[in-house]
Amino acid sequence: MSTSVRTERIAQELSDRLTPLHLRVEDLTVAPAGRRRIVRVLVDRDIPDDGPATTTPTAPVDLDLVADATRVIGTAMDEADLMGDAAYVLEVSSPGTDRPLTSPRHFRRNVGRLVRIVREGGEPVEGRIVSADADGVSLLVTGPKGATTETTLTYAECGRADIQVEFSKVGKETSDTNVDEDGEGDEA
Image (cartoon, rainbow, N blue to C red; front, side, top):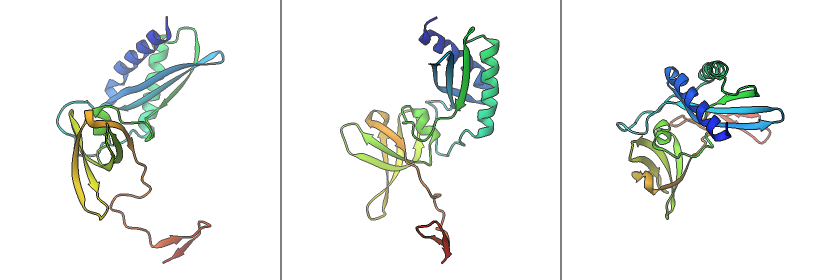
């Protein structure tokens, strides 16, 4: 059995088994590692690409859900004999913030998050996703003087799109503690 056929078979079997957890296989790779194979499965919430606009944040996949998925995937791999006689190591995780947004479901899943989109043939735009549907995404963009505007882009206009990591909560006031160079805090 070729690697791509095996990968497709594994992905289909796992997709069927993950449906009750409302998860989908986002990515799957099988790579040789000495005498074993490493089976890496990225799982994410099963959000459709179509349907009404998503305007509220989606809860991330937490460690408990990854643990549940790992049990389901491990059982499926063994019961369906998906790796044959080959020894394997199973790694299950969720997509990180460094994975590019490439389909409508990725934008829908990240409503409320800050993104940077490099437009096809245009300037990059950075803003907070306020809604996403099957056709495009709406961003709340903050201008140089603090004024905000809502910008809507179709997915055809979007080139590379990435989540921007934020180190403070939206709307959260700064702490009363100032941290100096050695990491020690002084009360303000």
